[in-house]
Image 1 (cartoon, rainbow, N blue to C red):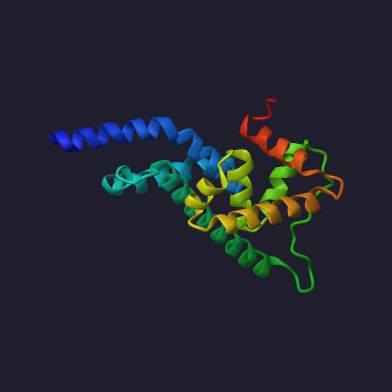
Image 2 (tube, rainbow, N blue to C red):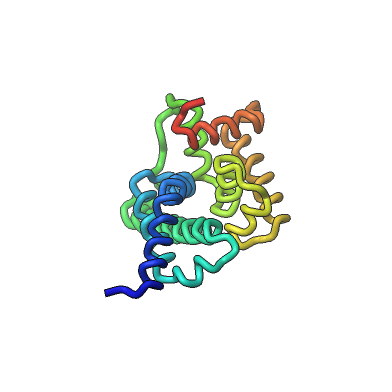
Length: 190
């Protein structure tokens, strides 16, 4: 039996969930590169928000807070995966062998190439590029989500785009990288 305040909070949270779950799952997918993990991360983030809902709903930017929670959960997941891969590679690789992650020549679309290049960026650069170009957030909003300064967002975004250009080939203009990132956001539709 809930009180009026509890029912109002639950209704508010439900509306927030309905309005932002898909966006948070998309953000998680772009940050981790794992479609299967995106729903789990978004759900985990929303569960964490529910536990702090009184504080979150009183915040100036609850959506930015939610994005920050997703970014932190994605960072933790990526770090765990990297550690696990290193342990497996060290355990199974014969002495003097490579890292075991060789890939066949790419025969995929530009969107998949950008996704692979994004995975190679350090987390903060990837987060800045994704939030700025795939989610069209302002520098200020991106800084708010990540808990960093606007200057950090500017430099990390610039360096991230430059690194994407390097990873995708020297002739790749920033506009193509941005178009490919936007294509990811719209599911490949132009």
